[in-house]
Image (tube, rainbow, N blue to C red; front, side, top):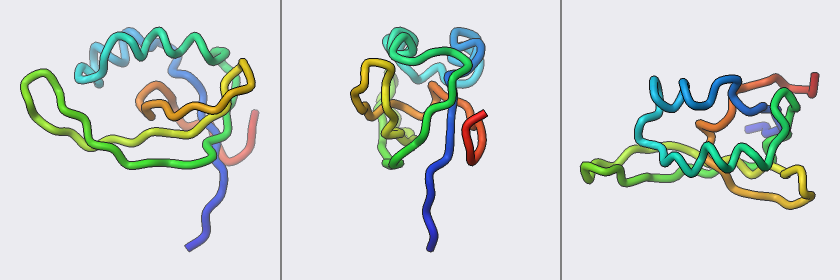
Length: 90
């Protein structure tokens, strides 16, 4: 198995994406997008599988990405916040 870094960027219309596709996600994740510049590519340094319990008690499988933030920290953040950008930055 070979692994490597890939790049993601914050979704263009987060509110619509969460309403349409990710209703299980907390609105707090929209605020977390402020740690990133829209349109900028970020390297995903690691991926972690996670299980979330949603309002009705159901469990869903998702993932978190380890990415650098604009304030020079690293954070684990839900993958749904991002969209794939490629194998190299734009």
